[in-house]
Image (cartoon, rainbow, N blue to C red; front, side):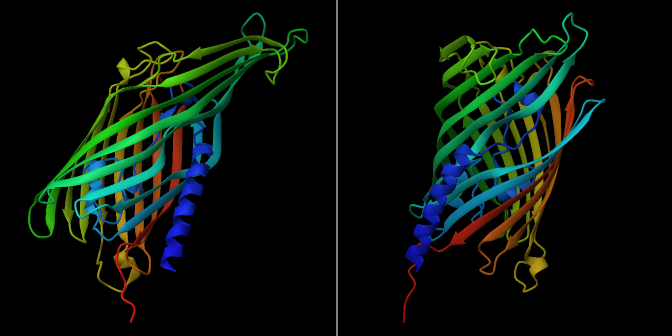
Length: 421
């Protein structure tokens, strides 16, 4: 039976892998009309409800792709499988109008397993960025009054394979994630002239097909304080990559873009980059009782090209703090065995508004819980996040997000040989 359960899980993994690669994103932000859209949170389960921390976290019950050095924290008999989904309620306000929306999506899926006592491997798929918006702008002051409609969709996903090795007394671990970034980002706009029946609407379609390999290096060092307490320091680095890209731009008087085509251009390798990024984190652990974590990350977007040009983006800084507390792991009372989590984060956007060339700041608060299953190894993770987006120019759009995330971490002794009597 165990063999069949393993096969079923692997088949399910492959099916979910396909579904996640074509799933729609869960953003409705007009700011995603620029660049690659909004950068996704790469943290799983526990880290997501701890403010999005992860660089300094090592766990034998959770997968943590934010730092590939963390994979060796599991024991040599365990197999981990993690899948997450989200539901989001958005409120957008520009001081005059307000709009709300509900959306959801599959967040990520991954698996992790040991190769030996000192080497572990992880593989999965997760989002890198999201693009999604739909809004209109009235232009009644022009000589020919018109309405501009804008919409966009798509984003970038990452399929990764990671490897980690303990190189010194289970205190120093190194790791690498080798990933493949891919995705299609589409922008549509329509200029509709009201009161001018003789003037046909003008449709514009812009589509970018992006892909390339990327890799990320990670290291973690554990400093014991006692038999049950320790500090963990984590560091990651991902170098700049240049996308292989195909871009399409079309202007038409036909909404379907197949007849009445006025102009179409195809541009190969236009010049689109993902910048260098550096992450550092530290955590304090007390076995079966408490975790405190702090992260800081830096992305050098100001030197990244987009459509062959620089100076389209701002450098991005993110700071995250979080904690986990377990009242009593060794009791029959369920609520005492739950892992209660909380966190906060701050970041500035790498995106710039196309008109004012300004960005925004983002503030987030998270709470969550890790609820153990009957076997006390697998967990259902719940998290709630409130995010406030504050633009640098007050007349631009304020955004608020209420995000609920659910994930399931399956933990089994796959490599343990059971004795049949």
